[in-house]
Length: 432
Image 1 (cartoon, rainbow, N blue to C red):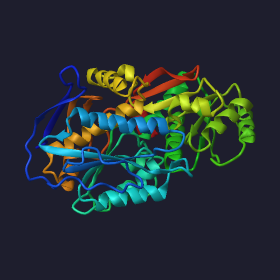
Image 2 (cartoon, rainbow, N blue to C red):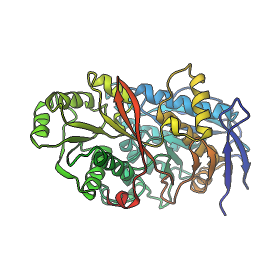
Image 3 (cartoon, helix red, strand yellow):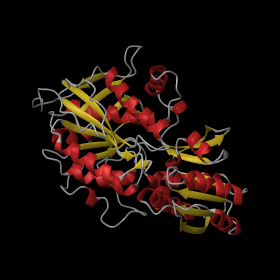
Image 4 (cartoon, rainbow, N blue to C red):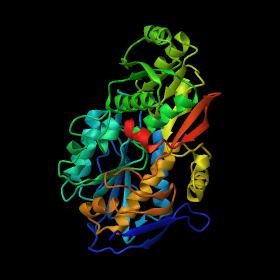
């Protein structure tokens, strides 16, 4: 029998209230307060008297810093409004950074170190992260083998398909290789790239694109989403004139822009990340092939940051797994309004909403558990949040969210404007 957790709006002033209808057993895993994670990569512990520690693992340096820092604030906001409670348990929180200043993005060695620290700290019962799928590939198996675990992870942003299920664009042995114990411990609150790829192909069709040029950066996320888009585009009868890799460290993409222009493509899809020289790539393509539409996945968020880094290129289309703030259910709208006031009026980024939803999922799993790592990981796949930030939230046995909308934003005057929300057909998702 599944334990059911009901999370909804609180009385006027709080975004979330928790009404628990659960059967829980066992005792607190810890009674002397959480043990802080290393200060080298993690913030000071919030609510240190809490018995169970939740860590977030996001890249807090580099071009996307404004987005990810706000995500940590969204997580803390949810916990604060729940009075640092998850059912009968008291929680603590630390924000950890998986990036380096030198890399300006997530760093593989730091991802490994952070996951090792999480696994070694017995008070850690859940991790909210990661942001980048490549980092998740490193952290999931470490947390899967954690003592007294596995250690639960909920990502607000990972979209690479192979983390949870096999399909076109995934590698041999995926996803089983990420779960050496044979038990799942990872879930995500956003749609995977087979949905995003299908949505991007649907977008191209809607823009009357008949010839598409597809680029990838040769990394797990970029290559995966590019492959998914290519496959879905072909399914829709769009001619993929070229599918090729680009060098994220190149000093110029002028010759690539000429190649795109000469191909006759009406649009180019870039599977990659803004932090990997994405701004330069967009700028050179826009200059060398000005009539070619540029389609981007969520690796190029925040949209306003991408416009800045590309030297002011507008008119790009960026897909982001999930709903826009304007289309959120009641609890989500309340979250945006209250959280925006809490952070001093700053615009609420879409992934901050999903970070809040990930925090809701973790709280629900802890509240339904016996307070142990293994118990939290087990309950994660049984939760049902009917009135949360995203509305109805639950996961299938793979750890994929059961609702999968994708929003396309158009860059206009340096800002993202909602262009369309796409829920791709299942047949197209399966082909992606």
